[in-house]
Amino acid sequence: IIDQHKKTLFKRGSVKIRVHIPEPVSEETYSNEVLSSESENEEKILEFIQNLITKMGYECKVNINFRKDLKLGFNIDSPNSSIIIGRKGKNLDAIQLLANVYAAKLDEDYKIIIDSEDYRMRHEEYIVRNAFKNAEYVRKTGKSKLLEPMNPFERRLIHTALNDFNGVETKSEGDGLYKQVRIIPVKNK
Image 1 (tube, helix red, strand yellow):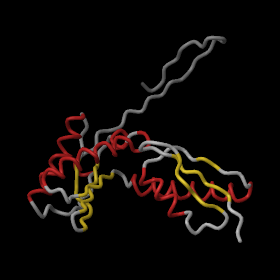
Image 2 (cartoon, one colour; image 1 turned 90 degrees about the horizontal axis):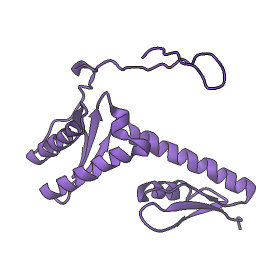
Image 3 (cartoon, rainbow, N blue to C red; image 1 turned 90 degrees about the vertical axis):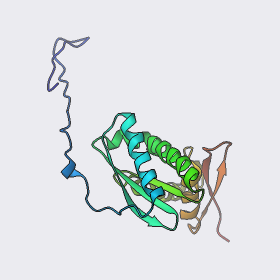
Image 4 (cartoon, helix red, strand yellow; image 1 turned 30 degrees about the vertical axis):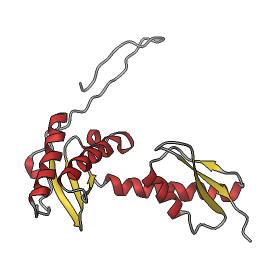
């Protein structure tokens, strides 16, 4: 729908509604820079991720983008990357969890990292920037600040980033997987 006119509740007039329909992505759009599978297990994991996303109803191309010991990084190229990533990366985390469960059945030492559109790197940068911004606020005001709930990896990023930040310290609070980080002012000695 490009434009749609309709009457408003309180005034006579029209409201324009615009809907953008993305063009289909061709096979040529996908990146050609990929690592090839070195083992049968890597090929099985690659196929598993590809089939999982296809069964979710989305077109995609899955590539191996890094390999370090038994840690494998996979990248998902798709015209529906935003849906595959999900709100705050929840869908990507769920896909990664399923891939790790499958990979553990092949070899318990495998560690799978799944990314799409460099989301993980951008998200880590955002978390660290936000941590510094909040630490500066805590240092200036002298009031502690409780951050939003985060998974263990995200909390560890904040603790590490603010470890050498003068005037504040961090601690995790709460129960369960998604605890919160509190940034606390500290007087320098």
